[in-house]
Image 1 (tube, helix red, strand yellow):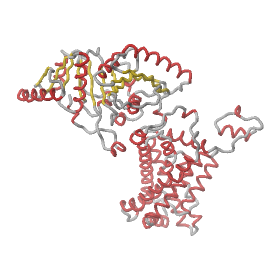
Image 2 (cartoon, rainbow, N blue to C red):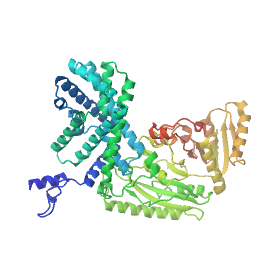
Image 3 (cartoon, rainbow, N blue to C red):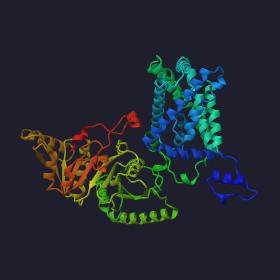
Image 4 (cartoon, rainbow, N blue to C red):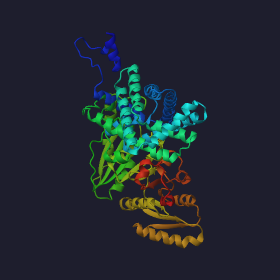
Length: 605
């Protein structure tokens, strides 16, 4: 019975789970169960913050210093190859049993998550880079201590200097394949570690597996980097040759060996039912575009409820996405979207109800059904209220612990031409509850964005300040639509520096108005040079002000309340911000910091 109880606890059960006599109790996890444990762990790790990952990597890199220290010390004191490597696995034991991050371990769990299309390639690469940087930083610190701290005995110090030189003298092809076998071993250890049921088994697996690396004269990238830094500090090795002729080939070999020889093989030996567990119920797989260019990772991006079924974008339609938090009070925002969509053929408005779910309490099936039913009732009432013959109105509901990110995820999924977002009290996204940094979230807008500060949303008299630029072009499109659908009177405002520039300013407005089909609009040239004061003064006679983006990352600045435009709060009119996506090179989108370069949009007011 004791053995049976142990089996039950290993599966997360209790004494009540003990099977009756005659039932078969599996003695080990199946491949599917091992894979489920790996993906669940990877889901947690790949969504960890930079600080957590990096310093866990630093701890792992410093632990590798123990391996380097003991290997060099024992090798210098004995002629027996076997005795020299007996303590080599100690640093790796610290890492795996202690739960530190090691780059070569991460060729299995995050890759498995990516193969399941639960994490994007950019998210995977970023995870790798953070962990590798941490490992290298920890290894470098350990190398400095060994080089200048007097830890090595003279014979051990001399032997340690030869380790990096031996790696550099090894042909690059041999280095690569030796490292590939080391990557196989490490990724295999991770798989077996998740298959093990107790700590003693895990220790034995890690010890025996990592003993094979020095016995087979194989190479591990973090150990190799530590050896190179030590030899650079205590010997005469230059860093660049050490990296290019030793560390980088080992890095590539470890990576490819871990991915191809273990992860992919182990993935394809599992069945199609490998993720049929409660933790991954109703999970949405990433699209191909999200896989290649997105930054999504782990189940954290998956809403608890998403009523939008399989979606196929009609390429001929003009779609406007309108996220709302309260269908009872935000009908005017949807009506405004319908007015804009009515000027286009196949105009479609997609009203998205985002329901905030508690992040610290799971919802049961009854809660989800109740919330979904109430939301669908409210959205049906909204659809009936705003419905018009010339516009198709669609509705859907998302229940999620996130809010702001769901707007961007739905936009990337449905690919609208425009997103219309209300701003002000009572809206969930004002709290800036985004898991990723906001500059990262908004570094590439998925479509045109309009953000409305609603003070009655009277569109009868529209003021459009402009100095040119793509965001003013979007404001002009809105102004034309309001002229057509609401009979709006449009005034164009341009601010110049001094009376001597008034003529040039008037000429600019005339030409800009003609170019944007606003030739009949009234024109205002202000020669004060003070843009915000000019807008505030002109806004007194208008009901709606259209502003192009004036700073980098206008959306993120709105969320964090750092958009420094006093006019937004000083005028009585509604204010509409317009921002267009900026193009960034592929490499920058994959690895960039998320901040966009200042462009012509910077002067779009």
